[in-house]
Image (cartoon, rainbow, N blue to C red):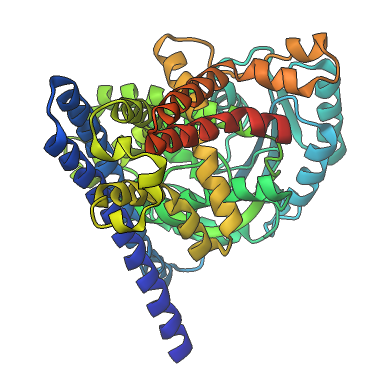
Length: 521
């Protein structure tokens, strides 16, 4: 008992330290903004100061909100334990539909994962399995149909992909399934705990409970895929528990169970790219509760290529940008809800946009600062290395501290996931994906197709020239990085070593899209 209390104390101190880091980040941003106002002597400098302050305000909102999420997540275990103590054994065994949506996935992988799902610790006569297939490849379609026949589960295929994954699930539940509960697993997810249903269904003794979501993680892979797993794990480890205490836990699209009654009342999944977020929002708006269980019952296929990650992030950002508009149109549904609930959805919709657009805007403001009259931006090489100027150049060290604060994910990853290197990769991925996410947001606004595909034309014309393909597919990032390197050179030859290093560092960060695409595919 003493050891457990000590562990809790350590974890609580870790949460407090994390909160302090995010608050310090906010203060650093505002401190630097005040410094810019202090040294502003021209309208141009004043404009830079105003622009930086605006971005600092946005950063402050997300940093303070992140601090709240991290702090509240510490108390979620006790919150869930209180709920668990009130549970009673189920008086009867309800029927469950297990839905596996798929789209052009390898039949061998789907076969292997369905085989594991059939091991669910639940009476077989109460279970029905549905393979909701939207595959467009005839060969794959035939293979999946054979898998369904092999395991005697129902195969449902659509000729069109209206509504994407949401449309496929809605089609099954509206036209084929009548079960009382719906369990959804993505076709690449492998069951690792057969007690999934027996653990989660008792929570539905509360008739106002709409869904229960569990923690989603990936299987072990290479260094890149394990870093991506941590990239997503921050959401499930800290944000989901904190949001669950506000009844805004996000249904993550799979590894969860939904009440049929709630599903019908809500009207099914809204047919958007990220149907899960929209469904969560509608569930809350219809007066239903939600629950998050921080336990991994199935692991997805690892994201082994940068292309897979870029497509995933494109879809997320495209959907989140759609959600922003949807959220404001539906605000009347939440007239009586607590302000924190509204802020949760607002932060969710703007989150990835903040990480992408704000990074690019901070970079552009940085260019303006380097070629301005800010004192530290014009320190030459010899001044830079003179130790006797340390007290005079506090603004330079303030800038360095602010830059190093961007490495916060590195320290958090080490603290919570025991890895410096993967934490550094998490930090780098945010820059490597900045333009991908921004393009996705823009594609939403101009109503372009939500899918993202690297153009393989260059690779076909130059067989074996992986470099050419990588450069061709990241033209925007390369052009931006080249501009940063060019501006860094101009600063450097003007004896502006601080400005040169600053912009050169940005050039390196935005080159990562090309580097990662070439290295990881």
